[in-house]
Length: 212
Image 1 (cartoon, helix red, strand yellow):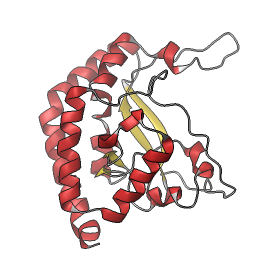
Image 2 (cartoon, helix red, strand yellow; image 1 turned 180 degrees about the vertical axis):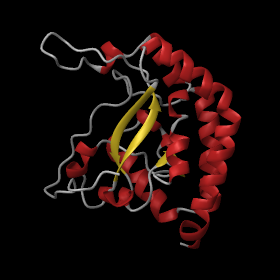
Image 3 (cartoon, rainbow, N blue to C red; image 1 turned 45 degrees about the horizontal axis):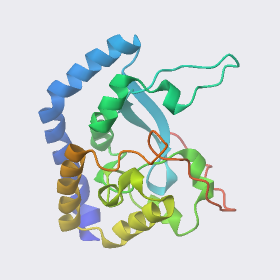
Image 4 (cartoon, rainbow, N blue to C red; image 1 turned 90 degrees about the vertical axis):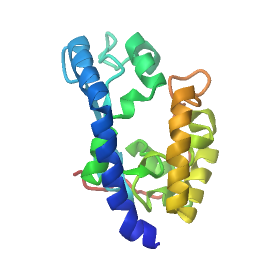
């Protein structure tokens, strides 16, 4: 409790600042390359629910084209992802801009991953506890299978992390994440670019939240 209340946020600020400094050459290189490639913003932004369901805009490097079919519907992820995007995703370089979300205080370095707003009403009460803390750039579920495990198992890992959050655990997760990124483990679920959509069930309405 003391760690979460007094230590975690200052530590997030220090770590994200140092990582942005170390990764700044890669950040700037991808900013230029993706800007030229897409002929628009190199960033992908999307509203996501954070702590207590408060909505913020997550920031990532863009790995897909904005392509539509003849009816004006957005094409599937598999049809829109670029070859460059596949490389960026496999190396997790698309996640680098989220360090800016951490600096802002929207996210933490470690915590449950921020998912889609449309999932809010699909969680059980237990699963909804994943919003009791700030979402993370990485988390316990990410080092224990990432997108290669089921949604149910992913949520169990998220809740376990919330109940057991500590400095030692965060350090373990950060180091494990580094080695997982190098190996490319759990990037996607079989048959999907990342992971199939969550289709859980809940009768409660959690979506009446304000956007930052």
